[in-house]
Amino acid sequence: MEEILEFLKSKMTIEEVTGSLIMTKVTGRLFSPIEKTISEIKEYFAQTEYTPLFDTEGKNQVVKFGVFKKVVGRQKYWLNIVLFTATLLSTIFVGAYNAGGDPFKNLSDIFLGIPFSLSIMAILTCHELGHYFVSKRAGMITSLPYFIPAPFHFFGTFGAVIRMKSIVPSRRTLLRVGVAGPIAGFVIALPLAIIGIALSEIAPAPEGLEYFRLGDSLLFSLLAKLLHPEIPSGYDLFLHPVALAGWIGFLVTSINLIPVGQLDGGHISYSLFLKKRKYSYILILAILVGLCLLWSGWILWIVLAFFLARRDPTVQDCITPLTTKEKLLAVIALVILIITFIPIPITFG
Image (tube, rainbow, N blue to C red):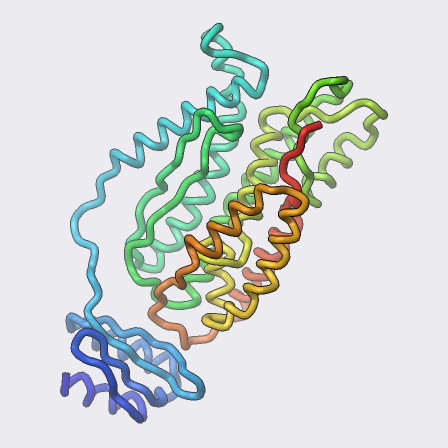
Protein backbone atom coordinates (compact mmCIF):
# COMPACT_ATOMS: atom_id res chain seq x y z
CA MET A 1 0.00 0.00 0.00
CA GLU A 2 2.79 2.45 0.90
CA GLU A 3 4.46 1.84 -2.48
CA ILE A 4 1.21 2.59 -4.29
CA LEU A 5 0.68 5.83 -2.38
CA GLU A 6 4.27 6.90 -3.06
CA PHE A 7 3.70 6.27 -6.76
CA LEU A 8 0.45 8.29 -6.74
CA LYS A 9 2.28 11.18 -5.05
CA SER A 10 4.45 11.38 -8.17
CA LYS A 11 1.32 11.62 -10.34
CA MET A 12 -0.98 13.88 -8.34
CA THR A 13 -1.22 16.30 -5.44
CA ILE A 14 -2.78 14.18 -2.68
CA GLU A 15 -5.11 15.94 -0.26
CA GLU A 16 -6.72 12.97 1.48
CA VAL A 17 -6.47 9.17 1.65
CA THR A 18 -9.42 7.16 2.97
CA GLY A 19 -10.61 3.56 2.87
CA SER A 20 -8.92 0.21 3.35
CA LEU A 21 -7.24 -2.57 1.39
CA ILE A 22 -10.61 -3.49 -0.10
CA MET A 23 -11.16 -0.04 -1.65
CA THR A 24 -8.89 2.96 -1.08
CA LYS A 25 -9.76 6.49 -2.22
CA VAL A 26 -7.12 9.11 -2.92
CA THR A 27 -8.39 12.67 -3.36
CA GLY A 28 -6.41 15.47 -5.03
CA ARG A 29 -5.46 16.73 -8.48
CA LEU A 30 -3.86 14.74 -11.30
CA PHE A 31 -0.82 16.28 -12.99
CA SER A 32 -1.24 17.56 -16.54
CA PRO A 33 -1.58 16.31 -19.18
CA ILE A 34 -4.33 14.31 -17.49
CA GLU A 35 -4.74 11.70 -20.26
CA LYS A 36 -1.04 10.80 -20.09
CA THR A 37 -1.11 10.66 -16.30
CA ILE A 38 -4.13 8.35 -16.29
CA SER A 39 -2.45 6.10 -18.85
CA GLU A 40 0.70 5.88 -16.71
CA ILE A 41 -1.32 5.06 -13.59
CA LYS A 42 -3.17 2.32 -15.48
CA GLU A 43 0.13 0.82 -16.64
CA TYR A 44 1.48 0.83 -13.11
CA PHE A 45 -1.60 -0.85 -11.61
CA ALA A 46 -1.61 -3.46 -14.38
CA GLN A 47 1.43 -4.95 -12.61
CA THR A 48 -0.52 -5.27 -9.35
CA GLU A 49 -3.69 -7.01 -8.22
CA TYR A 50 -5.49 -3.68 -7.95
CA THR A 51 -7.66 -1.86 -10.51
CA PRO A 52 -7.80 1.97 -10.46
CA LEU A 53 -10.99 3.97 -11.02
CA PHE A 54 -10.85 7.68 -11.92
CA ASP A 55 -13.64 10.10 -11.02
CA THR A 56 -14.33 13.63 -9.83
CA GLU A 57 -15.84 14.93 -6.60
CA GLY A 58 -16.57 18.64 -6.78
CA LYS A 59 -13.34 20.41 -7.74
CA ASN A 60 -11.21 17.43 -6.79
CA GLN A 61 -10.21 14.39 -8.78
CA VAL A 62 -10.34 10.94 -7.23
CA VAL A 63 -8.38 7.75 -7.78
CA LYS A 64 -10.01 4.70 -6.21
CA PHE A 65 -8.30 1.34 -6.29
CA GLY A 66 -9.32 -2.09 -5.07
CA VAL A 67 -9.47 -5.73 -6.06
CA PHE A 68 -12.20 -6.54 -8.55
CA LYS A 69 -13.33 -10.03 -9.43
CA LYS A 70 -11.89 -10.99 -12.80
CA VAL A 71 -13.62 -13.27 -15.26
CA VAL A 72 -11.70 -16.44 -15.90
CA GLY A 73 -12.33 -19.48 -18.03
CA ARG A 74 -13.29 -19.98 -21.62
CA GLN A 75 -16.65 -18.88 -22.92
CA LYS A 76 -19.05 -21.65 -23.91
CA TYR A 77 -21.08 -20.89 -27.02
CA TRP A 78 -23.63 -23.71 -26.93
CA LEU A 79 -26.27 -21.60 -25.14
CA ASN A 80 -25.86 -18.75 -27.64
CA ILE A 81 -26.33 -21.21 -30.52
CA VAL A 82 -29.38 -22.87 -28.92
CA LEU A 83 -31.07 -19.54 -28.19
CA PHE A 84 -30.29 -18.19 -31.67
CA THR A 85 -31.77 -21.32 -33.28
CA ALA A 86 -34.86 -21.21 -31.04
CA THR A 87 -35.42 -17.53 -31.83
CA LEU A 88 -34.97 -18.16 -35.55
CA LEU A 89 -37.65 -20.88 -35.38
CA SER A 90 -40.01 -18.82 -33.22
CA THR A 91 -39.81 -15.84 -35.59
CA ILE A 92 -40.42 -18.13 -38.57
CA PHE A 93 -43.57 -19.56 -36.94
CA VAL A 94 -44.85 -16.15 -35.85
CA GLY A 95 -44.01 -14.70 -39.26
CA ALA A 96 -46.01 -17.47 -40.92
CA TYR A 97 -49.06 -16.76 -38.75
CA ASN A 98 -48.77 -13.00 -39.31
CA ALA A 99 -48.73 -13.70 -43.06
CA GLY A 100 -51.99 -15.66 -42.80
CA GLY A 101 -50.55 -19.18 -42.70
CA ASP A 102 -50.85 -21.99 -40.16
CA PRO A 103 -47.82 -24.31 -40.08
CA PHE A 104 -49.61 -26.74 -37.76
CA LYS A 105 -52.29 -27.36 -40.37
CA ASN A 106 -50.16 -26.97 -43.46
CA LEU A 107 -46.42 -27.47 -42.97
CA SER A 108 -45.60 -25.68 -46.23
CA ASP A 109 -46.95 -22.46 -44.70
CA ILE A 110 -43.70 -22.34 -42.74
CA PHE A 111 -42.07 -20.75 -45.78
CA LEU A 112 -44.36 -17.73 -45.37
CA GLY A 113 -42.47 -16.83 -42.19
CA ILE A 114 -38.98 -16.84 -43.66
CA PRO A 115 -38.95 -13.24 -45.04
CA PHE A 116 -40.01 -11.83 -41.67
CA SER A 117 -37.69 -14.07 -39.67
CA LEU A 118 -34.55 -13.38 -41.71
CA SER A 119 -35.27 -9.64 -41.67
CA ILE A 120 -35.89 -9.28 -37.93
CA MET A 121 -32.99 -11.58 -37.08
CA ALA A 122 -30.67 -9.52 -39.30
CA ILE A 123 -31.68 -6.33 -37.48
CA LEU A 124 -31.29 -7.80 -33.99
CA THR A 125 -28.04 -9.59 -34.82
CA CYS A 126 -26.40 -6.48 -36.28
CA HIS A 127 -27.58 -4.42 -33.31
CA GLU A 128 -25.95 -6.76 -30.80
CA LEU A 129 -22.82 -7.36 -32.90
CA GLY A 130 -22.38 -3.59 -33.06
CA HIS A 131 -22.05 -3.61 -29.27
CA TYR A 132 -19.92 -6.76 -29.35
CA PHE A 133 -17.24 -5.69 -31.82
CA VAL A 134 -16.81 -2.18 -30.42
CA SER A 135 -16.48 -3.49 -26.87
CA LYS A 136 -14.03 -6.20 -27.94
CA ARG A 137 -11.97 -3.60 -29.80
CA ALA A 138 -11.74 -1.66 -26.54
CA GLY A 139 -10.34 -4.75 -24.82
CA MET A 140 -13.47 -5.59 -22.85
CA ILE A 141 -14.62 -9.11 -22.01
CA THR A 142 -18.02 -9.44 -23.68
CA SER A 143 -20.30 -12.35 -24.43
CA LEU A 144 -21.85 -13.14 -27.78
CA PRO A 145 -25.56 -12.21 -28.07
CA TYR A 146 -28.15 -14.18 -26.12
CA PHE A 147 -31.37 -14.18 -28.15
CA ILE A 148 -34.73 -14.47 -26.40
CA PRO A 149 -37.35 -16.53 -28.29
CA ALA A 150 -41.07 -15.77 -27.83
CA PRO A 151 -43.11 -18.18 -29.99
CA PHE A 152 -46.46 -16.87 -28.72
CA HIS A 153 -45.61 -13.19 -29.06
CA PHE A 154 -46.59 -10.96 -31.97
CA PHE A 155 -42.89 -10.32 -32.72
CA GLY A 156 -41.65 -13.87 -32.11
CA THR A 157 -38.83 -12.60 -29.91
CA PHE A 158 -38.08 -10.35 -26.96
CA GLY A 159 -34.84 -9.24 -28.59
CA ALA A 160 -31.31 -10.11 -27.56
CA VAL A 161 -28.72 -9.05 -24.99
CA ILE A 162 -24.98 -9.27 -24.49
CA ARG A 163 -23.14 -9.40 -21.18
CA MET A 164 -20.24 -7.05 -20.52
CA LYS A 165 -18.13 -8.98 -18.03
CA SER A 166 -15.44 -6.39 -17.39
CA ILE A 167 -15.20 -2.78 -16.30
CA VAL A 168 -15.79 -0.23 -19.06
CA PRO A 169 -12.37 1.41 -19.68
CA SER A 170 -13.66 4.98 -20.07
CA ARG A 171 -16.70 7.16 -20.65
CA ARG A 172 -15.54 7.41 -24.28
CA THR A 173 -15.74 3.63 -24.62
CA LEU A 174 -19.13 3.55 -22.91
CA LEU A 175 -20.53 6.04 -25.43
CA ARG A 176 -19.09 4.20 -28.42
CA VAL A 177 -20.41 0.84 -27.22
CA GLY A 178 -23.82 2.32 -26.42
CA VAL A 179 -24.15 4.04 -29.80
CA ALA A 180 -22.80 1.15 -31.88
CA GLY A 181 -25.81 -1.16 -31.41
CA PRO A 182 -28.63 1.25 -32.33
CA ILE A 183 -26.72 2.66 -35.32
CA ALA A 184 -25.86 -0.83 -36.64
CA GLY A 185 -29.45 -2.02 -36.21
CA PHE A 186 -30.84 1.14 -37.80
CA VAL A 187 -28.55 0.82 -40.82
CA ILE A 188 -30.10 -2.61 -41.49
CA ALA A 189 -33.68 -1.70 -40.55
CA LEU A 190 -33.84 1.32 -42.88
CA PRO A 191 -33.33 -0.46 -46.24
CA LEU A 192 -35.52 -3.35 -45.07
CA ALA A 193 -38.29 -0.90 -44.22
CA ILE A 194 -37.99 0.75 -47.65
CA ILE A 195 -38.07 -2.58 -49.48
CA GLY A 196 -40.89 -3.89 -47.31
CA ILE A 197 -43.07 -0.80 -47.69
CA ALA A 198 -42.57 -0.91 -51.46
CA LEU A 199 -43.80 -4.53 -51.41
CA SER A 200 -46.77 -3.73 -49.14
CA GLU A 201 -50.29 -3.62 -50.56
CA ILE A 202 -53.14 -1.15 -50.29
CA ALA A 203 -56.41 -2.98 -49.62
CA PRO A 204 -59.87 -2.26 -48.17
CA ALA A 205 -59.83 -2.00 -44.38
CA PRO A 206 -61.85 -4.82 -42.77
CA GLU A 207 -65.34 -3.66 -41.83
CA GLY A 208 -66.76 -4.72 -38.49
CA LEU A 209 -63.59 -6.65 -37.57
CA GLU A 210 -60.87 -5.73 -35.12
CA TYR A 211 -57.30 -5.88 -36.40
CA PHE A 212 -53.90 -4.67 -35.27
CA ARG A 213 -53.06 -1.20 -36.44
CA LEU A 214 -49.42 -0.22 -36.09
CA GLY A 215 -48.45 3.28 -35.06
CA ASP A 216 -46.13 5.45 -37.11
CA SER A 217 -42.79 7.00 -36.39
CA LEU A 218 -41.78 10.13 -38.28
CA LEU A 219 -39.45 8.14 -40.55
CA PHE A 220 -41.78 5.20 -41.22
CA SER A 221 -44.67 7.57 -41.96
CA LEU A 222 -42.50 9.56 -44.38
CA LEU A 223 -41.37 6.41 -46.20
CA ALA A 224 -44.96 5.17 -46.47
CA LYS A 225 -46.12 8.48 -47.95
CA LEU A 226 -43.24 8.58 -50.43
CA LEU A 227 -43.79 5.00 -51.64
CA HIS A 228 -47.61 5.03 -51.43
CA PRO A 229 -48.59 8.70 -51.81
CA GLU A 230 -52.34 8.08 -52.19
CA ILE A 231 -54.39 5.72 -50.02
CA PRO A 232 -58.14 5.98 -50.79
CA SER A 233 -60.67 6.47 -48.03
CA GLY A 234 -61.70 3.15 -46.51
CA TYR A 235 -58.41 1.54 -47.52
CA ASP A 236 -55.27 0.88 -45.52
CA LEU A 237 -51.65 -0.12 -46.10
CA PHE A 238 -51.11 -3.76 -45.16
CA LEU A 239 -47.45 -4.32 -44.42
CA HIS A 240 -45.35 -6.93 -46.13
CA PRO A 241 -43.49 -9.16 -43.60
CA VAL A 242 -40.21 -7.40 -44.42
CA ALA A 243 -41.85 -4.02 -43.75
CA LEU A 244 -43.13 -5.34 -40.42
CA ALA A 245 -39.59 -6.37 -39.50
CA GLY A 246 -38.35 -2.89 -40.42
CA TRP A 247 -41.10 -1.32 -38.30
CA ILE A 248 -40.11 -3.51 -35.34
CA GLY A 249 -36.47 -2.56 -35.94
CA PHE A 250 -37.37 1.13 -35.64
CA LEU A 251 -39.38 0.45 -32.47
CA VAL A 252 -36.59 -1.57 -30.83
CA THR A 253 -34.01 1.06 -31.78
CA SER A 254 -36.03 3.96 -30.34
CA ILE A 255 -36.86 2.16 -27.08
CA ASN A 256 -33.20 1.22 -26.61
CA LEU A 257 -32.22 4.87 -27.07
CA ILE A 258 -34.45 6.17 -24.25
CA PRO A 259 -31.85 7.80 -21.96
CA VAL A 260 -32.48 5.94 -18.72
CA GLY A 261 -31.19 2.95 -16.78
CA GLN A 262 -29.24 0.20 -18.51
CA LEU A 263 -30.71 0.91 -21.95
CA ASP A 264 -28.31 1.97 -24.70
CA GLY A 265 -29.59 5.52 -24.34
CA GLY A 266 -28.91 5.31 -20.61
CA HIS A 267 -25.28 4.41 -21.29
CA ILE A 268 -24.99 7.26 -23.78
CA SER A 269 -26.49 9.80 -21.35
CA TYR A 270 -24.22 8.55 -18.53
CA SER A 271 -21.15 8.97 -20.71
CA LEU A 272 -22.26 12.52 -21.50
CA PHE A 273 -23.38 13.72 -18.07
CA LEU A 274 -22.07 11.06 -15.65
CA LYS A 275 -23.85 11.28 -12.28
CA LYS A 276 -25.60 14.50 -13.32
CA ARG A 277 -27.84 12.50 -15.66
CA LYS A 278 -30.11 11.83 -12.67
CA TYR A 279 -31.41 15.39 -13.01
CA SER A 280 -32.96 14.45 -16.37
CA TYR A 281 -34.97 11.58 -14.88
CA ILE A 282 -37.86 13.77 -13.71
CA LEU A 283 -38.42 15.12 -17.22
CA ILE A 284 -38.08 11.69 -18.87
CA LEU A 285 -40.40 10.09 -16.30
CA ALA A 286 -42.98 12.85 -16.87
CA ILE A 287 -42.83 12.25 -20.64
CA LEU A 288 -43.26 8.49 -20.24
CA VAL A 289 -46.16 8.95 -17.80
CA GLY A 290 -47.80 11.26 -20.33
CA LEU A 291 -47.28 8.63 -23.03
CA CYS A 292 -49.05 6.09 -20.79
CA LEU A 293 -52.22 8.09 -21.40
CA LEU A 294 -51.84 7.27 -25.09
CA TRP A 295 -50.61 3.66 -24.76
CA SER A 296 -50.63 1.64 -21.53
CA GLY A 297 -47.61 -0.42 -22.64
CA TRP A 298 -45.28 2.40 -21.57
CA ILE A 299 -46.00 1.45 -17.95
CA LEU A 300 -43.83 -1.65 -18.43
CA TRP A 301 -40.91 0.45 -19.68
CA ILE A 302 -41.23 2.83 -16.74
CA VAL A 303 -40.91 -0.11 -14.37
CA LEU A 304 -37.98 -1.64 -16.27
CA ALA A 305 -36.02 1.57 -16.76
CA PHE A 306 -36.57 3.31 -13.43
CA PHE A 307 -36.91 0.49 -10.94
CA LEU A 308 -35.34 -2.71 -12.27
CA ALA A 309 -32.34 -1.41 -14.25
CA ARG A 310 -31.38 1.91 -12.74
CA ARG A 311 -27.85 0.98 -11.67
CA ASP A 312 -25.06 3.13 -13.08
CA PRO A 313 -22.40 1.33 -15.12
CA THR A 314 -18.92 0.88 -13.64
CA VAL A 315 -16.56 3.06 -15.70
CA GLN A 316 -12.84 3.12 -15.02
CA ASP A 317 -12.06 6.60 -16.37
CA CYS A 318 -14.77 9.21 -15.82
CA ILE A 319 -12.32 12.11 -16.00
CA THR A 320 -11.00 12.16 -19.59
CA PRO A 321 -13.46 14.32 -21.58
CA LEU A 322 -15.33 13.21 -24.68
CA THR A 323 -14.04 14.22 -28.09
CA THR A 324 -16.03 16.13 -30.71
CA LYS A 325 -16.44 12.90 -32.69
CA GLU A 326 -18.05 11.13 -29.75
CA LYS A 327 -20.37 14.05 -29.08
CA LEU A 328 -21.37 13.92 -32.75
CA LEU A 329 -22.18 10.21 -32.36
CA ALA A 330 -24.46 11.13 -29.44
CA VAL A 331 -26.23 13.71 -31.63
CA ILE A 332 -26.73 11.07 -34.35
CA ALA A 333 -28.23 8.73 -31.74
CA LEU A 334 -30.61 11.51 -30.61
CA VAL A 335 -31.73 12.12 -34.21
CA ILE A 336 -32.36 8.39 -34.70
CA LEU A 337 -34.41 8.33 -31.48
CA ILE A 338 -36.56 11.24 -32.66
CA ILE A 339 -37.28 9.91 -36.16
CA THR A 340 -37.92 6.28 -35.10
CA PHE A 341 -39.90 6.85 -31.90
CA ILE A 342 -43.49 5.56 -32.00
CA PRO A 343 -45.74 7.17 -29.33
CA ILE A 344 -48.58 4.66 -29.83
CA PRO A 345 -47.01 1.43 -31.14
CA ILE A 346 -50.14 -0.72 -31.45
CA THR A 347 -53.89 -0.08 -31.44
CA PHE A 348 -56.96 -2.01 -32.59
CA GLY A 349 -58.53 -0.82 -35.83
